Amino acid sequence: MLNSYYTIKKTGSAEQTIQKSRFITHMKRVSTEDAAKEFIEAIKKDHWNAAHNCSAYVIGENDDIQKANDDGEPSGTAGVPMLNVLLKQNLKDTVVVVTRYFGGIKLGAGGSIRAYGSSVSLGTEEIGVVNRRLMQNYRVECTYELLGKLENEIRQSSYLLTDIEYNEQVTFHIAVPFEERSTFESWLVEVSNDRVTFQAEGTSYLEEDR
Image (tube, rainbow, N blue to C red; front, side, top):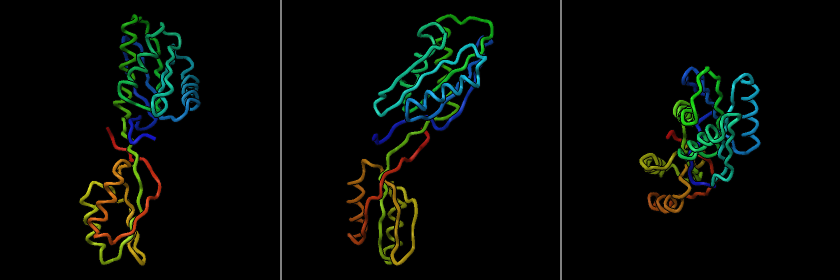
């Protein structure tokens, strides 16, 4: 499990016109190759009358699965340039399809490479990219006597206070960057004078715009 990685913010699309041809970029976050293939087939079905529906995807922590498809464009002029943009932007678990409605003017190999590559760049720009950061969730309990001081310390820190429960004792729910667990635990003992109890409660991802 990666401590952090970039991926597309949401499912979305973008469009540009080059030499009278329409290039529509469709992007989605996926975690499996089957999901990527399903998305590609759905776009092809929706745009069955387009000249081409070229695609690329990158899946896995170490970019284990990388695929590109030219869908009838000259070999290497569509899918690979699209894939290269995904890799250059360090995107993971992302699938992209660029639909082309031919406008009557041939672009040539170089023109096609630029058109498909720029379409993916446009897609990431308009749809957005997020940094998904792995967080360790903590449950921290203290007495009401310590409430004000501890809450103030937490809010002034870089750690994320997600919730507070008020029962017999006060319970803070705090999200901490996974790689900072030991630092956080030492910090918590220090600022509370070792007057709290805490336990880890699983992990989650925090998404921040790139």
